[in-house]
Image 1 (cartoon, rainbow, N blue to C red):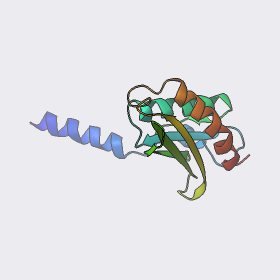
Image 2: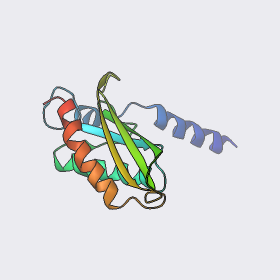
Image 3: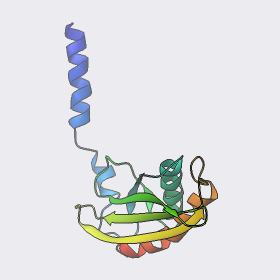
Length: 147
């Protein structure tokens, strides 16, 4: 019983301990290079949440913004929200709103994408649609980050 309590306390103290200084300094906002961002997406049908987040993370990495986890300090937070609505002619309108937050939680800006697609085409796999959306969004998102 004592061993279980000690193990639980050790595990809990590891969760509450501050990150090592090296990790905190790597994403400092003052350095033009070395920016880190965490990308999340909500509201997309099919595999859209995962596909869009992964595609945008890849695109941002290609232009120098490192991938981060939600638990790191001094990172930028890119939150995507997807909304799909009916459109005439057997189509759907897909709107993606990307909101970029600074390390201190301040909203730096918003970029919006809208595209009509064949109805149901994104209900399962996004594939190339995620890559195309990420490519277009990355250019706008980078403009919102400090240089």
